[in-house]
Amino acid sequence: MRRRMTLPAGATIGIIGGGQLGRMLAMAAARLGYRTIVLEPQADCPAAATCNRHIEAAYDDAAALEELARACDVVTYEFENVPVEAARSLENAVPVFPPPAALDAAQDRLAEKDFLTAAGLATAPYRAVDSDGELAAALEAFCGNGVLKTRRLGYDGKGQRVFRNAGAADTEGVFADMGGVPLILEGFVAFEREISVIAARGQDGAILAYDPAENTHREGILRSSTVPAGIGPATANAAREAASAVLHALDYVGVIGVEFFVLGDGALIVNEIAPRVHNSGHWTEAACHVPQFEQHIRAIAGLPLGATARHSHCVMENLIGDEALAAPRLLEEPNLVLHLYGKAEARPGRKMGHFTRLKPKD
Ligand code: AMP
Image (cartoon, rainbow, N blue to C red; front, side, top):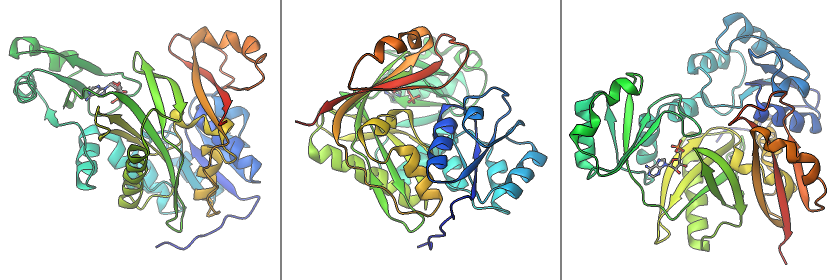
């Protein structure tokens, strides 16, 4: 077990990635007395407004990474597609949390499934697919039903295709259509609902998890997270334990999001892991004393983890595209907590903000 190295107030935290998650991490860090430096190529990124300094460079820019390592006491990241080599190069000079091994496990869906299986967790059946022929064979093994995904760089349902009652004839040209990149076919999971657990592991190995949230998606994008989820206590405990197993297996430090499919009998299938704060944990900012963002900063700064107890029931909804125009109306509701990301342009499909409606626990 690692000893806790507590960062003193005034120390500097590096954040790779300047989206809304980086923005909210920087706000949480400031509240605990830390400074932040964000590495992000986009000039007017959401985190630029809340960090102390913005290094405007590519995530794999060697000089920028050197500068980040020199100026920071610890470095973290807000998205899982940080180049692993960049994270490892930083590690020679400064602690990097979560450990870069978590990036290896999360960046490639095949490696992720192999990792989860080795950690004793159930996943959808899966096969690597690198040609139309391999797709036809895999579909046959899964009785014609499955979800074909790019192994890398897929998010919010991008780079996916669903097959139902499909045969070899349906696979012609698919590999090229998907970009000729390595793919994975997952067996179709007939789930009853989707849940996620946001959990944290401190530098001393302590683990705490928030209550599971029940999530809905539209066009592959998270729409809402409801807490409590419509699951029994045994399923909720099993989800927390699965998240703990992942954290232990990765010798993890920080917050992680683990997404599950729940079957009709309450059994759990892990869909994916996100080695970072997670959209389905935004409700913690409104319904818990210590939100996921502060929890992550506490963990990487070697501070004690905060209580994950919830004072209210709640529903978090994302504001996508011009839905954010509803903000003034939403603010008329007394039990609603709104968060906008300060993005100038409301492109369709772009996450502009979120809000959480609170309900007393009774
Ligand atoms: P992902 O990007 O892998 O999280 O997938 C996006 C969404 O597609 C999930 O939240 C599910 O609603 C659906 N999905 C993904 N994989 C499967 C699967 N193997 N079986 C059924 N539905 C899936």
